[in-house]
Amino acid sequence: MLEIEGLISGYGKGASVLKGIDLKAAKGDRLAIMGRNGMGKTLLAKTIMGLVRPSAGKVKFDGIDITGQHAHSVSNMGMAYVPQGREIFGDFTVLENLRMGVIGKPGLTLDLDRIYGWFPILKERERQRAGTMSGGQMQQLAIGRALIGRPKLLLLDEPSEGIQPSIVHEIAEKLRMICAEEGLTVIVIEQNFDMVEILAERVAFIENGKITGEVPVVQLAADPDLITRHMGL
Amino acid sequence: MSGFLPLALDALNYTSVLLLVSIGLVIVFGMMQVINLAHGEFFLVGAYAVLVLQGLGVPFWLTLPLAFAAGGLLGLVCDAAILRFIYHRPADTILATWGLSLAIRQAIVIIFGPSSQQVVAPLTEPVNVFGISYSSYRLAIIAIAIAVAAVVFAVLYKTAFGLAARAAMANRPMAQCLGINTRRLDRVTFSLGAALAGFSGAVMAPLMSVDPQMGMGFVLPAFLSILVGGVGSPAGAIWGSVVIGGSTTAAASIWTPVIAQIIVFSLSIAIIRFLPAGLSGLRRK
Ligand SMILES: Nc1ncnc2c1ncn2[C@@H]1O[C@H](COP(=O)(O)OP(=O)(O)OP(=O)(O)O)[C@@H](O)[C@H]1O
Ligand SMILES: [Mg+2]
Image 1 (cartoon, rainbow over the protein chains, first blue to last red):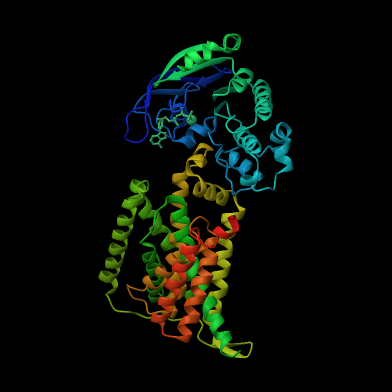
Image 2 (cartoon, rainbow over the protein chains, first blue to last red; image 1 turned 120 degrees about the vertical axis):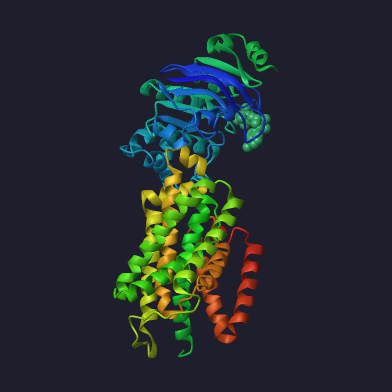
């Protein structure tokens, strides 16, 4: 589903932050990426999505080379992105935010019931200005907005950030259920092991611009020291 | 009362056309962060389009949609030939659109000469409104400009295109990540802005002397309008145009136009000083 080879990328004209990333996710895989702050996890997501052009390397999605493609094309090929900080449209209503998930995609209808079934709070708040919701509600909206576009791959960047533990747990469970139902491939960038443990099967660690190891989640759950070691803490 | 009503109608006339000019500036800035210094030249092109078309015997009312189309087409060409390559470098776009404005104005001087020319108004008979006699053409402009602005706002706030455009203004990368082709939106909004400026030039042509400098008179107040109204929102252009259009007309009727300009500038600076996000920033507080 997603194959990344020798990806080198950086911000602007500065030095490369990613120095040769290799990563693979098959259809239906649920992969987490963990790493310390500033290691370039968000940059990796932006480069995959097409917001940042890599200086070398290759990204293949569903068998097609998407390296250097515009983000809107990548999105239309079936990749959905839930960015760090959620980036919902604060001045728009909840409903308008959800509509944004489909209007760029030809042939898709606004299947609200499907999303409201998973996230009932969005139905309740349909007419509310999205910027006035709580962090957890906004995160559900960002996820709903991504899912309403019927993606094949869901790319999430720190979905647990700034959300209280019980809600993190709830969102993680829900995402896991949705992915199973829909056969979605998931790549989740996360620092929070609660989210990772529920949602992912496998964790790739990123350090100093490279993937330094991949470990099954069960192994990490059994031996928490492994995480600190792999994160280079 | 007899002094106030014509003044109010003049203000409404000026404000409604100013709004059409301002909409183009605000959507282009919101979308591409481009300060379009050539906007006044689209106004100019619309006015000259009326001049040319009337010379060819085209009825006045038909020249209005044609001027709209001429502005829109020129906007498309400018985007394809220039802005497309530099829109991501805002400082360069200021220079480029400034150069573009000089080029268009010079082209007009070369083709039509530097002197001012007259366009014949389609309605010349004054009409009676609430007991006063007022220009029927000005009344028609008020109706047309408000109707066109209403259509533009309906498009921006009620259609999928408008939602996508406002999303791209609010958060361009996120709009792209949701599958919105922002470059195509840029092109459409730039062209729409240019078309509205061309249309404004056309409706104002019979009321002004048509000369190569006429765009200035509208584009500077339009810049003030969007600053006062707030560049973050197309609806801000409404409040900005009302403030600038209203205060300009009122002050000019009491004092001289020069003093009116000084007053309007000071008022604008005061508003921007206390409301950096413009009047539309009030709602968001
Ligand atoms: N716009 C930018 N311009 C230049 N450098 C940037 C920019 N954004 C981030 N960086 C730098 O690039 C590096 C990688 O940043 P990135 O946001 O990808 O890290 P991250 O792993 O997602 O961190 P976090 O866990 O805090 O989200 C950091 O050193 C950061 O300081
Ligand atoms: Mg990050």
